[in-house]
Length: 407
Figure 1: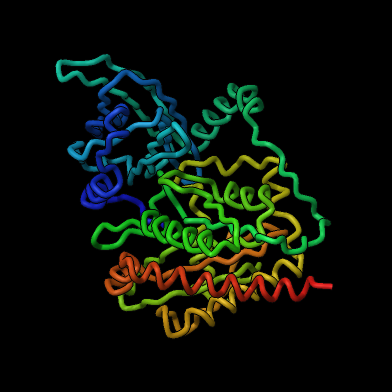
Figure 2: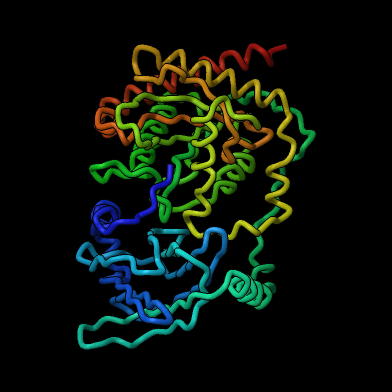
């Protein structure tokens, strides 16, 4: 789920919860403050940094955003929180990639970057990163973006992502002695996911649950296990899919926690892939989950050959059937142990479930908008109960797979 940090109170909670000081963080440059200033013809966004650092800034359309990329930094809990201003609707920040932090600024209308620069250290020993944005017609913004793209074409080509090695017509492999289970904790880094009233972030909840589940699966001695992320870092949706495919995973499990307006609704639900959603709620959920790249400031116009290959051939019946088999096992194991929605088996077009050769299931573990579910999802005993239920479902699934593939 996606919660834009539209209000100062919400952003303050994120700062406190997300960037707690550690020994490692103290060694990193710190963002000590941020400010927004509105002027008649432009708006100024300022970051106060404890060290001199490089930065890169660019714009993205539909939705309109300004993205500031920085070396990995920490955010000081006393950083000044300010109002959003006339031209800015929200902003968020976090670790985008290994060694790289990102600030994403949501805009109310099209803009161009008037100028960006660094002011050397002042009396408070702080360096200032300054970005001035200017409102323009939509067409002018697109022209500026296109100009920037052409300027960096050669550089982008050098850092193009590697091609995936999977084959469209490859038969589903037989189950190995130790099957590989890839666990995908949703969101992370600059994408916080759902936000509870208390300030609990979905990205932290699902990571902790994934780590407990990994430990149980590994300790069983029956499985190899890989987490798409094992720390608070952002991954593109299609990166998550590619990880499972490149590692030739036998099962892919994506963990999430929902948040909706109706705070009385609670319980887990389990999703598999379908081009047509099972109901309106499933369709809306998939639409929100699939916006993760937008949240993190990804250019959705990048339609590389690799991406196209990931999204093709969704009709492989065997993979879909195996996904459904595992989802049904999960439902059976959750009964009586994990609170579930009345309609707990659903399907929709989630991007992270679109690997054509890896059985994939997405579990919404509960609702952070519901206080009971939030307490439950943060409870250590519940994490163990949830993990044990999943392990039993995994055992039952692969037992059946071995029977199907035995001579």
